[in-house]
Image 1 (cartoon, helix red, strand yellow):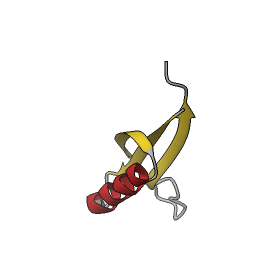
Image 2: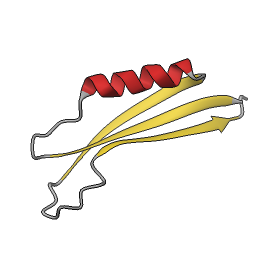
Image 3: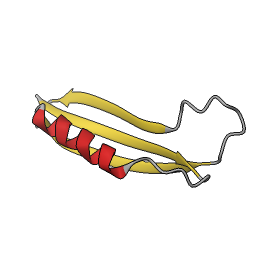
Image 4: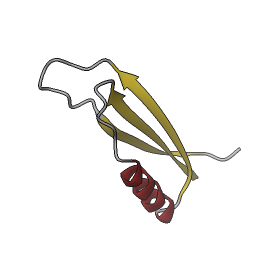
Length: 68
């Protein structure tokens, strides 16, 4: 089995950016833990007017797949 990580960086258009160094550190840590492939995607969403903005940030999914 091979481990694959999918990283989704969600930002809004307010100008506040996710710290790129933190993303790189997280990727390096995953690779130390036998994750063979890391796919990073970044999306921008409209700024939410509510205080509940839990969707912004870094989301990670790690899964095992069979090699074919």
